[in-house]
Image 1: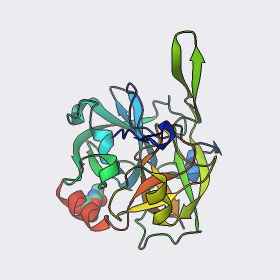
Image 2 (image 1 turned 180 degrees about the vertical axis):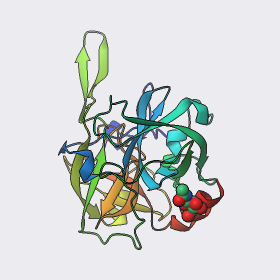
Image 3 (image 1 turned 60 degrees about the horizontal axis):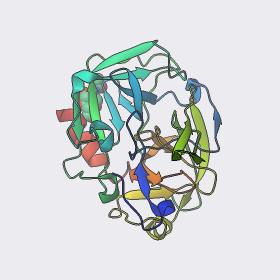
Image 4 (image 1 turned 180 degrees about the horizontal axis):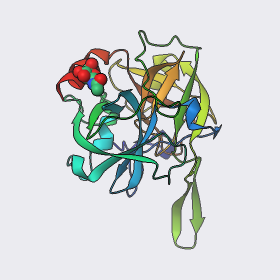
Length: 264
Ligand SMILES: *[C@@H]1O[C@H](CO)[C@@H](O)[C@H](O)[C@H]1NC(C)=O
């Protein structure tokens, strides 16, 4: 999931956290704190209790996330028993509603974020209570958003990532928020991401973000919402989360989501 560009700034990363670099990850850059009531479909996916990715509630038993969130650094699939989902809280440390994961299902065509099909679903071990305004499902978009439209992304990904030098060499410093962040972003033409990245998937994606407003490590798998529908799933972006992010199109993979949500 980590593509080495010729220039460091062209390198891309998928957007999950909790692993050693170089790793796929994404976070919200240029955003602000929001309450869970403004994004009640947002969940935090945890591995051994630590936040790794975002996700969206499809229905009381099914969560949509990115396929790469299900894989370990060595390419092996995580085990459902090691995963949990936090719902109904903007506080990443909350223990309010944590549900065990019963089953995971990455898209069968998924190889790496930059090759597309970066989508997966998971089934919860017990259904969520959708009767509160803190936990709600989100409908899938019925078309891809037009370039120029505004969308909103939410997540607990890094709010800042920088390369710093000290006498031992260069290292990353990152700032990981406890509270859910949101940023409003602009949908771009697919060609902008095709130009901007070293490698891009087929056309089953959405290109969005601009300088200073985008996602970063830890936001992976989380929702890009346009007109109150799930339009995209955070997939990958630049190493320093400077501008564009590639999102898996929820609309174009909606048939896969429906079929697999019924059969998982
Ligand atoms: C979730 O959605 C799938 C696919 O539409 C469906 O088969 C399943 O029954 C739904 N689960 C619940 C709890 O509504």
